[in-house]
Image (cartoon, rainbow over all chains, first blue to last red; front, top):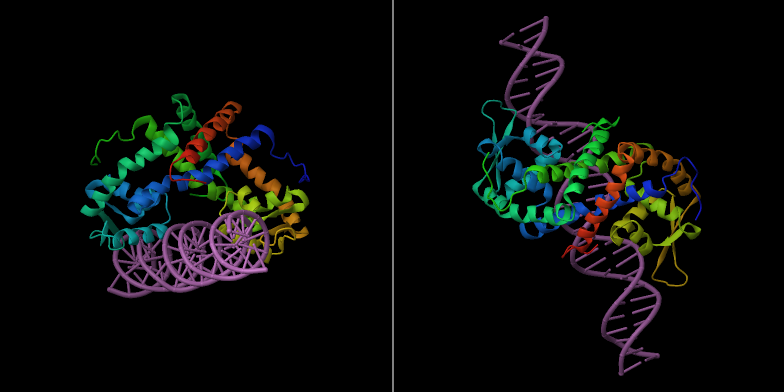
Length: 160
Length: 160
DNA sequence: ACTCTTTAGTTGACTGAGCAAGTACTTGAA
DNA sequence: TTCAAGTACTTGCTCAGTCAACTAAAGAGT
C-alpha cells in the first residue's frame, strides 16, 4: 500500500468517524425506502409529498411550496407529482388567484394510501434509527446533525 | 392540519431527531460531491473506486473485490469502471488465474488524478463533517453510526 | 469426459434526477 | 396600454442506477 501524499491525511479516529458516517449515508436511505416501496410502491420522497399535503390546509399546496417542504427542485417535484397524479393520489389545478401557480391536492385515495403507509414507515424509522439509540444518543444526534447541516448550508458554492 | 391516526405517531424530540438526520441524509451527499465534481469531474463513488485501487496491492483489484470495497452492486461498478476506463484512469484485464475474473488497474493518469483530488476531498470532509464537531461529538457519532449500521444490516428483507 | 450448477462480469430496457430551454401568466414602468 | 422583465411550472435531453437476462469460465458429480 502506497501512501498518497501527506497533506494532513485523514487517519485514525477521524477516518473512522467519517467512514462510519459514510456507511450510514450509503445504506440507510435504501433501507428506509425498502418497506415503503415494497408495500406501497412509494419512495421516501413521494411519501414526503403526501405527508406535506396531508398536513396542509385543505390538503393542498402550490407546487413551489411543496418543493420547499420536500427540499426539492421544482423539476424533480413536477415529475414526482405527475407520477402520483397518474395513480390518482394527487390532483393538479391552476390557482384561480394566480394563473402561474398550480395547486396540488391530495385526493381521497391519496389520503387513504398515506394513512396506510404512515404507521409502517414510522415503524421503520424507529427500528432503524430511534430504537437502536439511547436517549442520550438521540440528544447528541440532534446536536450533531444540526452542526453538520449548518456547515453544509454555509458551504460556498452550495446554496440549497 | 389534520391528524393522521394515532399509532404512536412520531412526535416531539424523536421527530426532531429524525428530521435532523433526514436533512443531513438529503443534503450532505450532494455537498460532498460538489467540489470533486466541479474540479475533477468525479463523483464521490468514482473517487471511492480510485481510492480502493490506489491502496490495493499493485494498484489492482478484481471487479468483485472492488464492488465490495465500494459497497456497490457489480452492475453499478461495471458501468462506473467503464466511465473511468474511457477517461484513461483505469484499465481492465482478464485475470490469468481465473478467466471469469477481471482485474481493474489504476493507470498512471488515474493515480495522478487521485493524488490531485485527495487533499481537496479530505478538506471538504473536514469542513462539512469533522471540523464542525467537538472531539466528544465525533466520538459520539462513531457510536451512533455503528448502532444504526447494525440495525440496517440486521434488517429483515435488507441484505447488503 | 460430459453435463449441471455456480460464479464473474456485462448489457439492454427502464426509471428517476439534473440542467437548460420553453411556455404561460403577471407585474412594473414608460 | 403595451411591452419588457420576472415568476411558476413543465419538458427534452442526457446520464447514472436498478433489475433481469445474457455470456463465459470454473467446479462438481457421475
